[in-house]
Image (tube, rainbow, N blue to C red; front, side):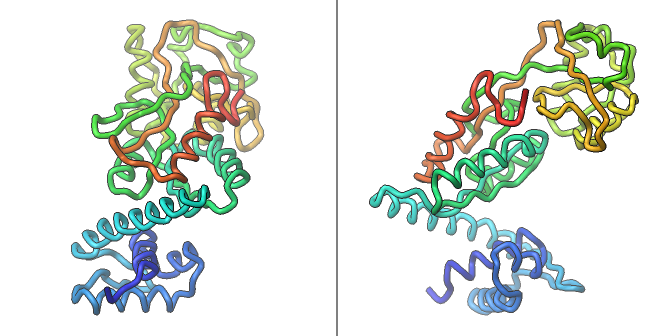
Length: 305
């Protein structure tokens, strides 16, 4: 074999980052080392892996895209081999790649990564944030081994382990007339402007809550970021719906919010762990899963009320 796993790691970093500069930062190596690894692989395999653009930008060729998929799989197998060696010495180590739903990521991932690092000093967790569809794609491609997400339209080739059920709730500005209520029906909010979280699968879930009650929301905006919705709601531009309650009852600019439980019998979302069905988890992945089961459970979700 005339190439190394380290060269493949540098190639994968460049393919994922689309930049030699960013790839060098990700793997903590010099830019020339990244360039040399790519040049060596292209010479070894006799194919062009990247199209070079101005200012060191890169895009994969069709051959490079196929090579990226296979290189990821090979590196994952190498990690598994390292994990097997670790089992012999009862150690958890290496790098674990996980994903988390973007709306949950700021609350859960810092706690999970910090706790795992304290328990297993020899292991590293690389975490990415994505919407539901993006997480499914990353699981299938092998970019991540585990996804922390909701049970929204999980396909048959993936398996889902539930951890905690989270019912929907509404939030309004602290000065809104309805903020004095602790709970109310979604019908009481139907005439208020509604700001929708416009992410794949999430948007369908929230709109279905209205349709279940025979209501049509008065749409005031659609946004891909919950923090944008929270800021607009805190300014009095309408109300929002969510399933996870941050301890911080304010928007990023400091304006106060009020959380309102919904009295209607509406379906909750289930927070849990998704992975490829039948995948044999490494020892490090198994340790991370066990920790998630301990820290995230019914009535106890880090970062939430």
